[in-house]
Image 1 (cartoon, rainbow, N blue to C red):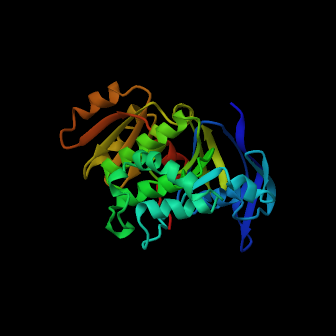
Image 2: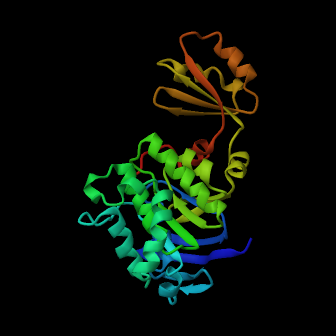
Image 3: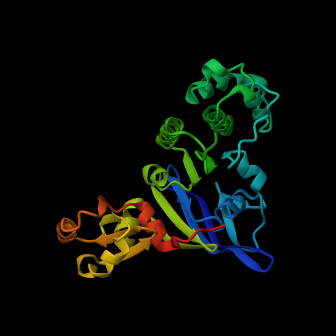
Length: 303
């Protein structure tokens, strides 16, 4: 697959600190590429650099064959953006929001009107065509923001935490729509705090921390390369004390509050040991992307 986004040595400095610190990226046509990282890792700044909304302090960016930021205006004609916070016009109806936004791309009203039925059906908002934005639910507003990002039929869509604040039903509908976009050959660049979202949607991921990419690959590759295959989570007031006497049963332990995370290649000896401790509760599961994320970036809170 050909690349639609390339970044080399990309840097952005604020107040003498590198918020984006020399990252390299290559994003392929038709894939969903995820940027993961704790708060302040540099994800949103990276998106803004890739879009040409910020000028870099070092390195270079190419978006859809155009040098960024020098040719950002031309490149953005073929780009859609779903921002972190909805910025719909509350005075307009659903259809009017799409119509006005399409005009920013130089589309005629007839061209936009011709796209409206497909956009409304895609976002499951056909029945809300004439509804004002304040009457919409949070999930409806998020779907309208996605539909608005598609009004110019873009080749690349940037999505900054697209499902934050949504209930599970709304999240699953958005996920379905995003999978449909990649099936059509669209390229998605996604930031998210939901590890299950990244694992479900992304073909490849980059984990960022302190402005740098610290690991990159498919979800399965990241799990295989960074974490033991099985996890046993042990809960209870005595779990921490128990872990001190059970080091031979796990490859690695992590303590978080009253929980002990036991990372193992073979869980059978550990599960047998836990049968001797009925006061402890436990969950046995395969390792996932959240385990990788926490190992690479730590469990401490980020402000």
